[in-house]
Amino acid sequence: MFREGVEEFVADAGILGLARKSSELLMLGQARGADGMAKLLINHTSADPRVYRYDRIVKKGVFSLDATQQVSTLKGVGAELARHALPVLRGVFFSTPADPFEPVLQLQAEDAMREV
Image (cartoon, rainbow, N blue to C red):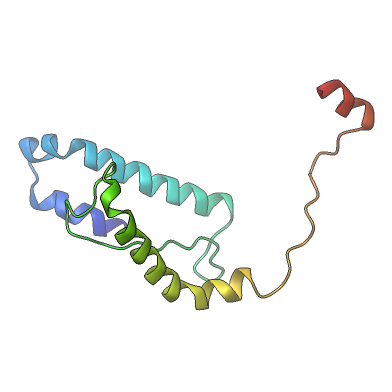
């Protein structure tokens, strides 16, 4: 998975090539690091997966962060990815009801009144 984003940087290696793409390289590293940290925190393994990531690879420049005219297209992409992901995610997240939430630390009545 890591190599997918790195290969394009290797093709344009060298000081000038890396200087032009340094921000992209830093963002890729941050994203991969965040994915890795999430997997470590929730004990993700290939035998017991707990992180599910769905990405659509598109040509550079198709979408822009602030381009609101592409919202309907992005909604369609999301719906398509959801159709493919739903069979897997349904079995993992929607097959049984979740346990009721119980906080790890319980506030005593007098502590709760002091917080307000």
